[in-house]
Length: 324
Image (cartoon, rainbow, N blue to C red; front, side, top):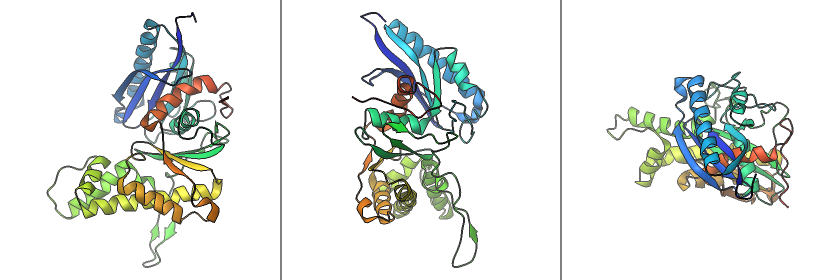
């Protein structure tokens, strides 16, 4: 790198709705040439991979043209990713068993990681978690997941699966009718779930109204005084709060950082979430822990994806970042 060049990495935040990408300068964390394209995972994994590779090439070429040395590519994926960078689930994007990291490495040295861990890392280095020895990061959007960060290291777990918060059922029995219930938090409190629940209420009432296609529609209805929309948002926030409190009870973090599009939305959803979380925390001295929104907002995943290029020297280890 000559004196005129800057150092950066390509960050790819690959979610179920969109792929947010850009060239992230190091060590400032500033995003250059931000680009957003729709993911459209229903087309199949190979189509999404083709778009991802093309986007990475475009950003690499742009960086070289603007005298930015590209140290590598970091990709955060909305799936389970093991400690070797292999995608091991196909809940949103059908990349299980697909050599995504290998394909990206043909463009520049690449590392693939779970998107919630990249976002948590960004919040530790640049955001709300900076200076915290132990915090939990929860992302709420198309899906819901979490990451524990201790001493600057997002926990991966033995297999890379230490992100699951809302995807498995909570089996119970109704005390009134005896029916066996298997509620899944992600099918109740995520963005798509909120939209689906409100649309079902409207349909059952034979109500004539605008099409409900996203959680934003429910927030809009609630802000206009719709009681059903308010109830959907409140019940979703309360359900999320119960699971978040479970994390606090088990992990005992100093603070909780909440990100993702829905996690940053505020309103009745946020109020119900915080209230429910505090109500379900067992220890008296933990109940008042700070619960804050992500400082980097929806940029956390993109910035954190690029940051792993500079911080994850050993792909099989947890991250280490010297903030001094």
